Length: 351
Image 1 (tube, rainbow, N blue to C red):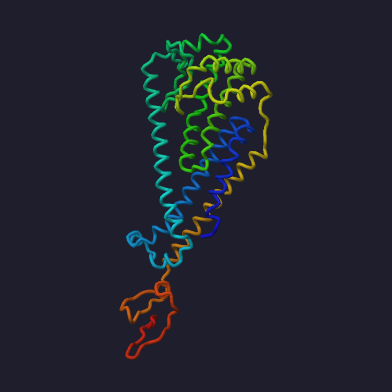
Image 2: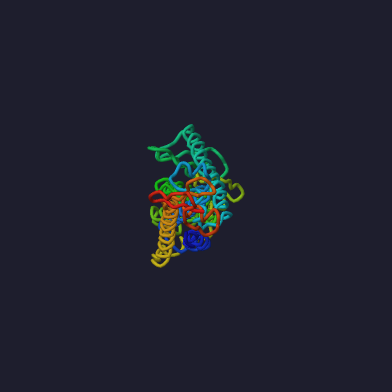
């Protein structure tokens, strides 16, 4: 197995450092899609790399080898992966797998609780739920299959904004639902759980999805300044009452407000092909490295499955392969028939 097996970890570390910059430079819709795709690809590649590394150790366990056609002893002799590295990979697989399951489960449960709460509330046309609460707050709650979701607003936030700003508010939250931003955020969170080197990904995707909704709201009202003003007023009104709603509820006026406002007060983001190309190269590098590692692992097990000429070990009284005897004894084999022994066809007597 070649050094290329570790390339997904190197790419993931570099991507983790560059993710915040990519999120700021790219158009928000493009940034969200590319960052999530790159993050998921790197996370999947790193997990598969851990599987390949751990498999070389697990394949040497006699019970595991009994289910395959390879020789545990021969695999141990051929294995280029240090045993501590393979054992560490096995431990890492268990840890990141548990973290990913916990993250995904937590998000699904949060969606279900929020959806049930919204279904119990009376919704106006367009899936709008108005809660009589003086605390200024607004967020989107995704629905299930066939359910477009709900926009939840309090009377406090409605009083804090004028008519045009309320249009921005509703357009922003409906953009979250229409573009399924909660799925991007969940994918980013699970990818970061599978690969801790991508720890910056969830926050970056949260920021880009907020900017994505900001841009759609500005397009709908036709005034970027009004959209910026609405975000500022919502943030100021809810400054002392901010609560965490999780990935299932996408809140208005939260999440890096100043950068979002600055983007709205400038021209719409322009295309950056070099940044896009860098992300595509990162994804391609991970995929190519993973495929090479898969090929190396398959070749290793295939070599361990090969059947060299069978020899009879005179002093051991058992049949085994030349390669196995060399690996186990660590000394060159001398072939020849002892007195009184007769070589069978295709076999050698070894002493």
